Amino acid sequence: MDNIIHLLSEIDQIYLWDLIGTFVFGISGVLVGLERKMDVFGMFILAFVTGVGGGTVRDVLIRTTTLDPVPVFWMKNLMYVLMIVASVVITLPFKKKFVGHWSYWLMVFDTIGLGVFTIIGLEKTLRFELSPVIAILLGAMTGSFGGVIRDILANKLPAVFHKEIYATACVAGGIVYFLIDGLMGHNTVVFITILVVIAVRLLSVKYKWELPKFLN
Image (cartoon, rainbow, N blue to C red; front, side, top):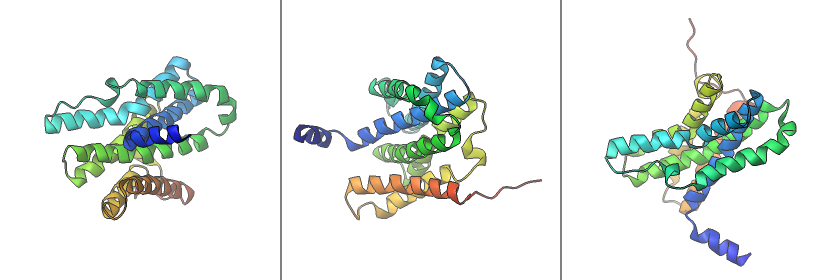
């Protein structure tokens, strides 16, 4: 056990969160595939775009803006692909547990991934010395764009465009990050930011919070 704890302490904590987020978002992609009665390949594609879609868009934008040779993160590290494969393999045996509860479980895994990927996108943006405003926006993009691509491929209207607070939860988490950064340990700041995103998203679902809509 001591060896495991020591090993975890040596690993970049943000990298660990990134793998966790990829796995969780992968599960949400599999759930949409199951709901749409897709085959295994279709579910893998949805898991893949959900797990890496937002981060891919983020890396391309950072590369274009900074002119730094920023690699698309998953192309240099096969662990991300393995996490997506694991999300498919682990979810399928329990598919009967999800039947009739698609929206609930999708919301749960989607919300966890949203919180984790927001902090990933935010911190990676800061490493390239971009402004806090851009960091918050790219954090929200990292958290939400994978789900947008997944829903479009599944012929669903993405939640970010019409449902409860979604990308706004990412923005709220990003603002909290900069408010408390420097007041406590970095890992604590990361954890609180993730919790804020998750809490805002869950509360918006429970109390049906929505942004204003302008109808004809």
